[in-house]
Image 1 (cartoon, rainbow, N blue to C red):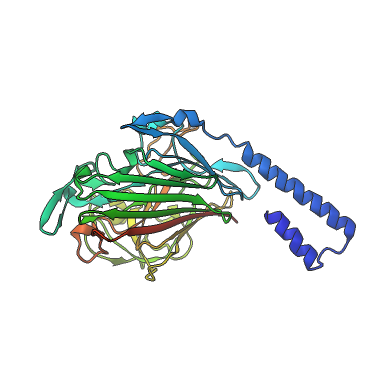
Image 2: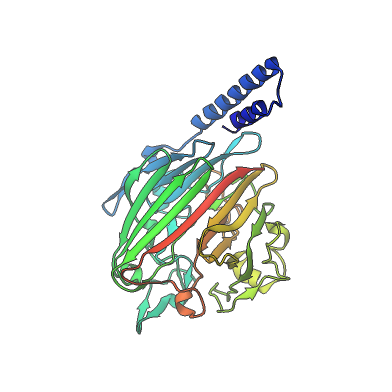
Length: 394
């Protein structure tokens, strides 16, 4: 489509006035478009049958979404996971830039990284000591991470078979009800979530949730990206920009201290394009706490609307990822706990810092910090969130 737009522009502005040259350019453009279509249609996509099973009475499968402009994504309704993202480089070569597994069994009976590509909640990120207080009642949650609760607890939303209410070539609608008391959280939480791919190569995630009791909610997506392609090398040479002037510093178990600290003069200042690995091994206590980057940035956008939060650029391929959100925070995790003992879907090991996650969210442990943005949801209110991962080439 891009090539056709170029030739139309050139012709309409009389920048090509030789009829023979114009005809040659037209046919060349058509060939390029056909090549792109053929390449996209012959991608080594995963087999749907490898994702068909039953989990707690719910059927799982694999779904393929296409933008119609070069991006193909495969998702499973088990944890609403993004399994693969096929994207071209500046030369038209496709790679799968999302880390994932090749069948449903590896997600269910997991021996490696659990949170690959999934929705996380009911509370994304960490809650200190696995407890919080709401209206004078202390709620105790399962402990699953260094004495803390991470991403909702033992089951979480990532281990559930979500309902598929509607699906088309570029969009899928999920729903799920987390029952009162699941993982210790109060209220029946009804969640609706839509994944869609646009012709602008935006992967849009829309969340909505409602409860019948006061509760806390913080949802996010945990896709791991490597813009070189899964297991094709380090992400430390990716160039990143984060539109944030502050972070929420953490202690040794990655629980926020409650401080909101400026990034000025620290390894956390990504307000200008900076290679991820440039300062990742600095002698900084915050980096030591996370074994690298595993922190929440306080985004500069205060409008309440969707705005650009971060950009990641991989120089060799030209692939670029933008993250847009209406949330106040962004967790950047640099894949510090991958150790090569687990393989991705192509059989290659997922090594140290070979994938990154960019999770749009409210702040970690907010229920225990009154100065943080509230994550409380009351009956009659609707939790909403928009997250956009946009793909392009430089």
